[in-house]
Image (tube, rainbow, N blue to C red):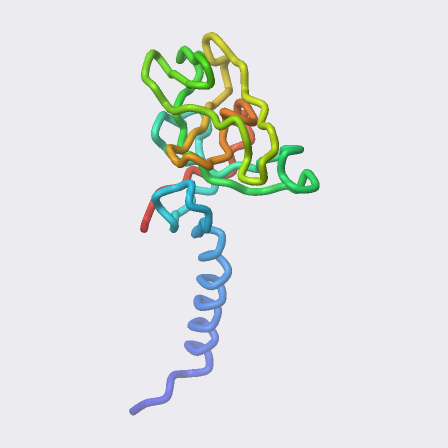
Length: 158
């Protein structure tokens, strides 16, 4: 068997290094039970103007509710987009008359939760993100996500 030339070996190693450094930028794994899927392929340079309902988005969540106001990257499903009507009735959230789910009164730690009180048409450049999981921390509690804050569109793999 013939040995590869040093030049070919160098090129092969460069390809491996490039692939190894780009894969983590393209794959996201979520460990929380709030999403049905756990592994996502990321489109890191999305056209944020074309984000639609039922797509998953990766964004930075900044919230005082999260311990120490840490910055967290989270993936959530888009439930409503600009121009949709969002309203709340007794902690139950609706988008264009379609029931999304109810907000909890207390966190898993027993703390009283505040709810996003918006009633009306979702403004331009805003997204309402949601998960069906009972303990999901989503727009019901922290409000809209700005389209400009979306880092990636996340496509479920597994």
